Length: 112
Length: 111
Image 1 (cartoon, rainbow over the protein chains, first blue to last red):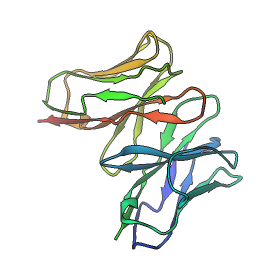
Image 2 (cartoon, chains in turn orange, cyan):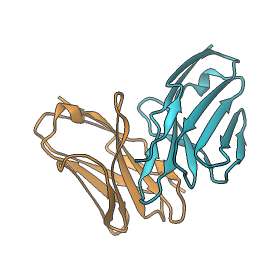
Image 3 (spheres, chains in turn green, red):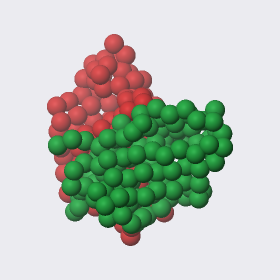
Image 4 (cartoon, each protein chain N blue to C red):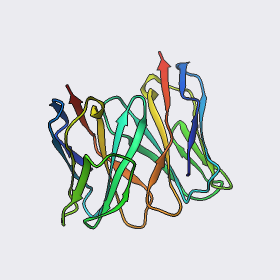
């Protein structure tokens, strides 16, 4: 079974731009969560989607948004990028009835 | 607010030594996961523990879930340089769907 895939793996943007990251979960998994990871803050939860609905949300500004499609693929969008948005963005998928999340390789975003 | 506290934060040891990493909380979790992460990559699942008192072994790694399901430990026997990485514990909080992560233990094993 293929694992979680994320595209692109690396991105360089400048302040003020916007970015869209994509995540394809493990086949059959309907839950997708997004995390931001930085050296200083560790793994910070952004949001979780299940069956196209946002089920939970972390404490991030409205510039961070996401969505999920009917095939469970998910995207997250960050608008008006700031230098502090530079981070590794991780996506994790989860099967129904389990607590275990499986992570993708991440997208490394650098904001200049 | 549920929290998972990991200790130690950093650990630098010689190849062949044993070590234990702890993950503690005042809250009960239905399960706990342990992950290992290498720089620039996503966390890779090592194990999920579900039952209080459960012990799982994965080669040189031994995982234990506390009887009260509030804490867990990871013990590595005869550490090798390939064990180097960031070890994260995670648990599903009660009353919601959010997974809670510890801050991680960064392990460096010197040859």
